[in-house]
Image (cartoon, rainbow, N blue to C red; front, side, top):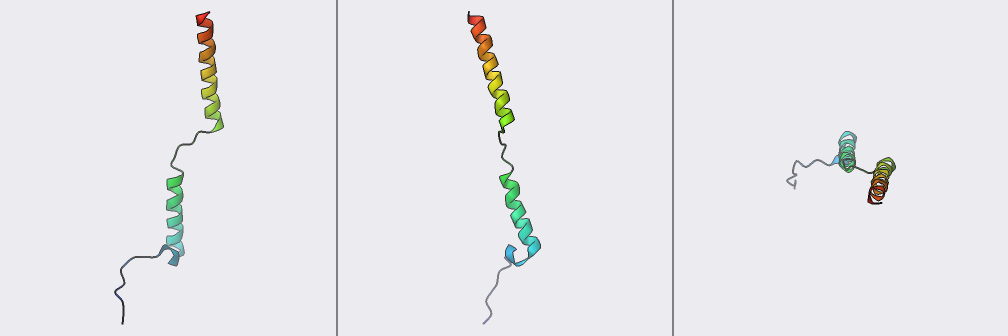
Length: 59
């Protein structure tokens, strides 16, 4: 007896399809913005500078 097979393709059966499947998952993961050390340092320096200016203005 032959079973009724649907047209679902297995990405593991074809190397090219598997690579496309893996690359698709990687592009979604890298889409998130990430804070690196340089951005955090600039933000921290700005906060310290504003605090110093506010302290000078108060006294």
